[in-house]
Length: 431
Ligand SMILES: [Zn+2]
Image 1 (tube, rainbow, N blue to C red):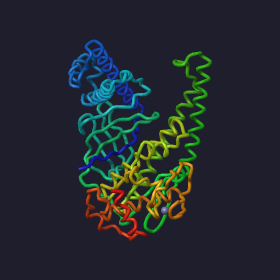
Image 2 (spheres, rainbow, N blue to C red):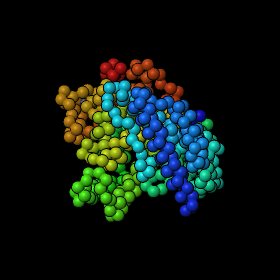
Image 3 (cartoon, rainbow, N blue to C red):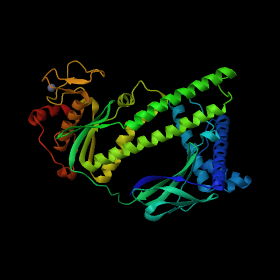
């Protein structure tokens, strides 16, 4: 059994749109009211309310407030659960000796949506032909047309209603018995780069996967819009003499909306790109290797020079991408492994002689020039080739890490790398 998420866009009519808004407002007030209660109890008694306590209070509130009793009871509990999680985070920080603020009250503009716990309780999915598009029934809102398609359909379990950049979405968690995914029979290892998205080494040679051009263009546009919004905010602050609570002109509001829409669009396209690329890797390879992700890699991958939204999109992607490959590789039954960076040092080590340089390469050194064997190639190419050699060693079961190569590997076309015997000699240091 495996859980899969599928997101549909909702197409409510005017009346349903108003009810969605109203429901969002009720959940937002419930969240804030419950937060107020938790803060009060914490300040008076020095301890927190439990989730169960709050659910009991909710029962009383439902009796007293007709609007609340009109909502799906389980979805209200989901909202309380979200607050509970925010408070657990708060308590963890208290325990660590930090001085955290309480979780924030949420304005309606920042309130993300609500959730349902059980299919058939407050919501019901009616997928269309071939599980494409269809409708969803939402308690108190009605039958709302949806657009979207799960790659593989399963049993609907939980759902979330999300509002993003003025649009409504339904995110459904499906339980899938057997995920079907094709598996390739090649082997390959890749490295992240600033210039190329991936540099891929296979026994046949080097390939690269570029960052899509339209994304690069959109990132530039995003940056320009972000600067424009910051400038307008600064001007409004200066004109009113207030840092917060300054009047927001129609012009500024429009610019903010535009920025948030473009940001959502870029984030979505970026995610699509990561999904496609990871799917292609799994479709082609039975064994995939890369470098384990460290915080440092995140900064490198994100480009330390980038700020704000751009960084957010870039920096999130390596971690998200690795997770996607991991999941898809499991579904396909193929091998995916991350090399321990400190041990292997793929950017420093020479892929040809497996030696480390006496003097460390700097980030600005774009070329690999081995002081020992004289091998010269691109920095990313070298790293990818180091990872490939490491992967080949792992597949041959020679690394001594205790994990036996699975049967899967018998399907991998193994080729003897040049100088493999010399490498075997060196792998004692790796283990
Ligand atoms: Zn060398």
